[in-house]
Length: 516
Image (cartoon, helix red, strand yellow):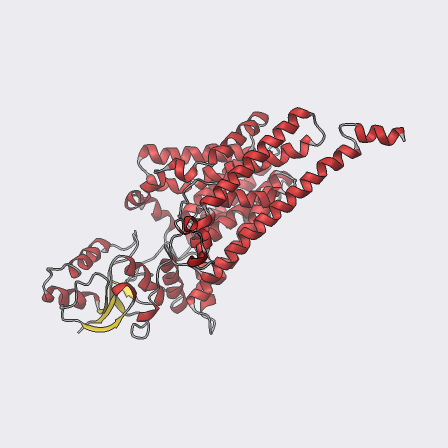
């Protein structure tokens, strides 16, 4: 009797441990349920596949690889140029699209499902290398999706819930999932001093990641460098194998036949203006991230080589250098700053909670503090991302405050497909130019910056001239002949008397004209 009583009363006794296990089990259940609900939402989003961004670019890429996998040409305009969008992942999707009965948009839904699975499993594997607490992977997933700011930041490669709802089918999501697997595999290889074949495989994976999405590949590289720096057991025998892996990755980049990866280093000038917005409104977009930064401080205090601390510092260096030098495209490495902070706050909370069950009152207060901060941050972040519900719930059902956070998806151009065939050239500008190539047609000027298209500026000038209100009909006929234009999509109402034959009318007052 006395033995049982003393055991229960002892700080580390059975009774105390059971008392600590009950809230821990409840926390695991709540975390798993929350992650499950968020993932269910994303699965429903995959079915809907909302279009409010670069979906047309990726659909056009699959179209070209579907029809001419060995020599696809430019994905947007009728020109024989390489394109950085022709990655190993998109090549695979293009080959899948050749199967009978599969449309390009069905293939993109399959790509979204595969990317989501890869991201979830990658997060689970990587977080398990950082901490053993069973609730950590689910909480980490919630943190990655919700712990951003009070205004959703919608950009590919930034895995906030609302952003991911629009970009889950993009190569950036697939690549980010591969990055988490790379970090997990690399951590294990360093701990067990893996053999040559494993390091060569890691190098090949690193090269494939950089080919699939260059900006997410930079984030993957920063995380990999931090992982190597943090390794405690990296002996001399590892360095030759690591070097061989890097060499294999470089060879993969060099031999890829669809575009010259190393030529992209000279493409920054045309991208800086587009990416300057990445540095704007940091409080609204990343206001919850300082919670994770605060969690990095004790981790760095305990271990100066902590992998998340190293990851964060390297990310800050890259992003800060981009701001100071005016290379704003380097801001695409912002996930290298945000991700380690998001993971750090979760790991700090669960590790403190685990230790508090057998520690004194101070650790218990610390556990409660981190738990409250994390829960509060997730609730605020979840509310900020609530607009993503609009992609799976009818707008009329949403409360007005949630509907205000919803970004309506674009209307597609399926209404032109009874007339416009694959390979036809369509004169279009603005949003139509970003969407029409998804159905197999070309435009005169690309809807996106194209580093490899030498006459991009001339094509853009011709398009602006064509839609000019005072442009003579003779000039328009000359542009049509020069670029082989067969159809015109006019959304501005300036071509009603331009000598074109009206064929169909679409939503928002758009008109499809046939060229005489």
